Amino acid sequence: MKRILLSSLAVILFAASAFARTDGDQAAKPSDSGSSTTAAAPASSTAKKAPVAESSSVTPATAATTPAASAPVQQQKSESSSTNPPAASQTQTAVATVSSDSTEESAGAATFSHSDTQSDQDDQSPLYFRIGGAEFSPLGFLDATSVFRSTDVGSGIGTSFGSIPFNGASPAGQLTELRFSAQNSRLGMKIDADPGGDLKVRGYVETDFLGNAATNLQIGSHPDTLRMRLYWVDVHKGKVEVLAGQSWSMMTPNRIGISPMPGDLFYTQDMDTNYQVGLVWLRTPGFRLVLHPNDNIAWGFALEDPEQQNGGVVTYPTGFNDNQVDENGNGGGSKTPNKGPDIISKLAFDTHPNGGGRNFHIEVAGVYRAFRLNTVGLGNVTTSAGGGSLNMNLELVKNFHLIFDSFWSDGGGRYIFQLGPDFAVNVNSAGNFVPSPIHADSGIGGFEYTMNKSLLYAYYGGAYFGRDFIATAGTGGTTTYTGYGYPGSANSNNRTIQEPTIGLVQTFWKNPKYGDIKLITQISYLSRNPWADTATSATGSNPGGAPSAHLGMAFADLRFDLP
Image (tube, rainbow, N blue to C red):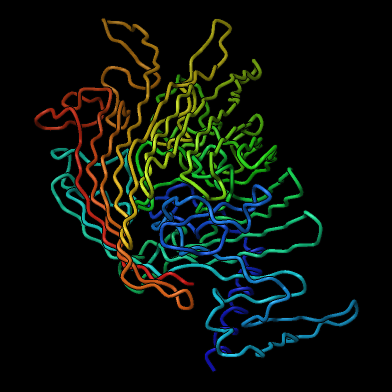
């Protein structure tokens, strides 16, 4: 009876993933819950080993079956890893076969075989089923999250880092906040096919419940909305890998290679569903090509969905139509006239990507962007922008990883969780509106240390945004400003945002057949410094003139991982 129930659950999850293919919902922007994307995803691509083992995806030819060096499992974001099912020649816990022909569909034609002995079943995990030559592995976890904040951010379980309130600016700055939520729970499916030779195909879909929320979400039934996080297919043949669909941006730091699997990416162990200040990341549609000259080196190229955005914090010159820029809804989506895709390249080096020693992962990445604006009667003006990253994830001693991520850009605000704008708008001598990319930098330093069933982590992250404005003298000695960060600008014109974090992931129970139960904790302190003196800000005042806003917060999350 247990096996029948598990098999039925697998079919239901597969049907849900198939239905998601026809869903027209647009994935919420990186942060949701007022906020963003949620915490991480199902782990890496290889078989589950000890709690400290994380493995790479379908990338290098040998990586699909060999555990990686003892990189800490991305516990917060990734489910206890999605393991590779046994070979087709082995007995299987549940094998589903579906038959149909060109003239007739057989509804409910799935049949299941239960020929395993009890000892065979004890050794097999996780649950998966087969349709034709493809193996379907359900994945996910169940979360019960609580968060306490020292001021009322009002953004759900994902923190709005760029708008934490000043203590004297409003009641929100003097009120604490407490929330419970199950929104970060995850459902997904991994589909693997091996057509033959050195050709391998993987499909991946992942969802959470942080979609666009009803206005009465917190009042009654908490009808959290299902949302697409990831949906991609990856084809790997020999030394060449091609991916298409919605994945983590190639600019997101990797732990291993240039793998698209969530467990092979670094987006912290934080429970905050907006992750950590300073992290460079997007989840976005795109196409990528990755070359694997050998097991240690990967070189990737990507075309990703563009979006010129300013977040509603830039003051524009008179006559400028801001529908040309995504202002968090105004002119967003398909209305923004992007010039072309963001073009990304990444080169990654790993000393021991397939295990056998302590892995040192080092990568460099760059992104090219193009911003275009129109002036009625004068035509279009395009400005180039871009940035680069240097990232390292080094296992200095067994199970201890030192982490360093950095990003420098002109016009890269979108990649720093949109905490700052991409560009200001100037006017040239011919009267054209001209995009002027704003300097934006970010970085994270920290460590992760796994000890038996405990994972201790700490990070320090920060983001910096430059100022770009024009002052125009008026009559009577007055001065008018346009741009970002000018004297007297709104306190949403942030100069720096910083966040130190410490946390512990404690696994209480784990069984390869049934999953695991863990407690994830996080304590963080946020500070936000705008360019203007907040005591004399042009938009409101801050009694006492505090130069920055501060916030303390603590998360606790009880998680059950599927096997």
